[in-house]
Length: 71
Image 1 (cartoon, helix red, strand yellow):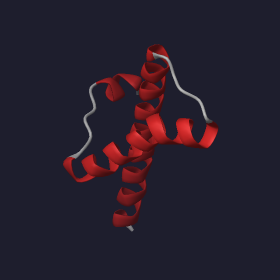
Image 2 (image 1 turned 45 degrees about the vertical axis):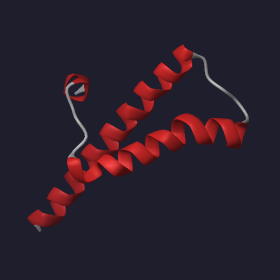
Image 3 (image 1 turned 30 degrees about the horizontal axis):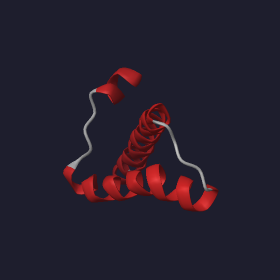
Image 4 (image 1 turned 90 degrees about the vertical axis):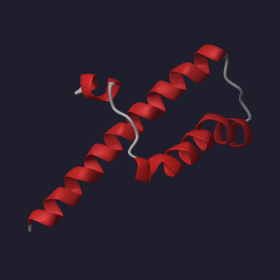
């Protein structure tokens, strides 16, 4: 399952949403909501975490759509 995530690219229809979500989660939420800044390693780790979460949420969304279409 994680092997699929490593080679996954964001679909074109989700690109704008992905950029907005990642920008909010990487910069605005930590800085303005919690008042913290990350180190370079912190940014890298958070990027990987948020990207993986986005991937898994997208996979669940696709599975739900497929199940609804099958009915």
